[in-house]
Image (cartoon, rainbow, N blue to C red; front, top):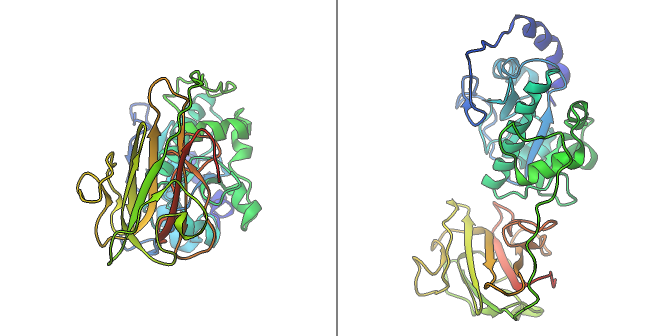
Length: 373
C-alpha cells in the first residue's frame, strides 16, 4: 500500500522539531545514505526494469523526515521507495535500486527498479531546487536502466506517474500532478523536462519549454542498407539478414530461442550498437561489424543471454538525416515490441529493443528517415 495516508500523523509532528542548518549545503547530485535500508531490510525480490515511478508525498514535511519514517517503519507501514527528494534539492536513499520497493502496488513495485518521492514544500525557491533534482533523478534512472524517458505514454515502458499507475493498473493516487501544479508545473512541462533532463536550478522551470531548433534537413537522401546477424546461444552464427522483410528471412534470430552475440554493418554512414545481457547489463558500444572479431566487431559475450539491443546511425555529411529503426520480440511473448528509433532521439519511439530479463529471440532493422514497419 502507498505510504501517504499512513505518514501524515507521524510526519507532521516530526516536522515541527526538524531544522536543517543553513550551513548544511549538499549538492543535488549527492545521495545521502544515512537512511538506507540494510541488506537484511526491504524486499529481497529483484525488479523487471520497465518503469521508473514518480511520486509526491502528499504531506508538507521535510524529505529527511520522510526518509527517517520509511527507514524506521518500512515493515510496519508496508511502504517505502528508493529515493526521497527535497530539502532544497537533496536526495535521500531508502530502498535499494533494482529491488522491489513498496510504493505503487504489486505491478508497479515489480516493474520499477527506481521509485522517487518528491517531498512537498510551500517555499518556491526550495521547490525549484527540489524539482530539478527530482526531474534529473527520474531522467538519469531511466537512462541507466534502458527505460524510455517518455512520461505517461501509452507504452508500458517508460517513466510513469503514480497517477498513470492508478489509471492503467491499480490504485487511487493522482500524484505528483496536483503538487506540481501548485507550483506552476503542467503535465506537459513535466513530461518535457523528464524526457530531456534539466540543468541547474537557475533554469526557468516555470516558463513554457521551447523545443530545440532542429538543423536543416538536406534533401539528398541516399539508400542505406543494413546487414546483421545473431549468434544462437550454444550453437552457431545464423545467416545474415539485409534490412527486413516478411517470413523467416525477414529477421535475425530463431523464434523461441536465445542468442548471445550480434553484429551489424551498413553500406553508407556508420552505426554503433550495444547489447544488454542478463548476466552483465549493458556492454560497451561497438562500431564495427565482423563476426570473426569477437572483441571489436561483435556485441555480446559468448554464452551470455542478450535481452536488449540499442543502436545509433550517423548519416554522412550533406545527406538527408536518417535513423536506425528497429524492433524485437522476446522468447516469452508473441508479437513485436514497440519500434525504436536510434537511441530514443526521435520522439514517440522507444530507446532500445527488448524487455530486460526476457531473452531476445528475433530482431529487425532498417535505416530510413521514417518508420517502415
